[in-house]
Length: 289
Image (cartoon, rainbow, N blue to C red; front, side):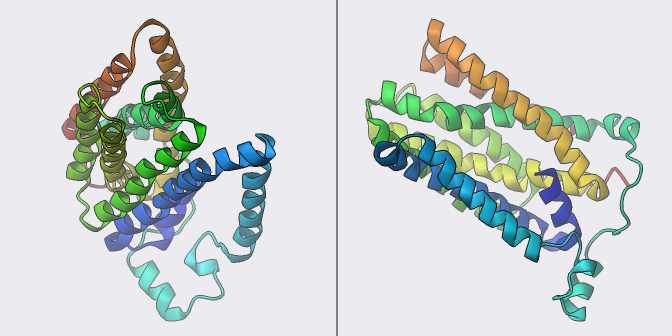
């Protein structure tokens, strides 16, 4: 993901950045759709190792294509015309590589810490839904493995769609507020729904509104420090991954002593904290040269 952000900062003009970022990130959601849809079928027919062989093979195919077609910058791509290179380079940042990373300067900026904290708060809820959703469908809604896998597809489809909608109407502060408060609202509704269909709808709406973060949190690295976009995403994504580690473990701990309502309350609280931190300290202006 840091490499992807860095590549986009070199390849995409500023005016198209939110749209392109949303489009690229929607690939992750469509990958989740594919995995959740086909994994139960593969496990049922060929056993659980077949999942890893299948998707591992796809990764190998992608790697071969990547080596043939991908370039670090427009200047290195022999297939680009002069007009295309001029268009891309005219609206992009300096292409000189970063040799020394000013860590002290980066970590002294409040918007950088807003990114780190917001990424943690965002990923807590996202990872819980990703890892625990099949269990929720099975334990609470009484769906079997195949049904759970198919229904888990719906939220990721909505994320792929809404991420691209957000990319076209992007304003980072507004989009990220929707990306936090939307999931928080729909998770609170799970305590009141009485039918499996409404529970699935709430999950889908929660994930769909979560996708607006692609036009807020995930594009902000390139806004505040385009030359250090990869470094900034590396920092914030470290916090995001830690949220996945602690959030997944904490959910199991909470379920042993409490209920799913308690799990969702923690996520909602972190979404609200993320909203406050984001709106108080983040910025869309460049703060790092």
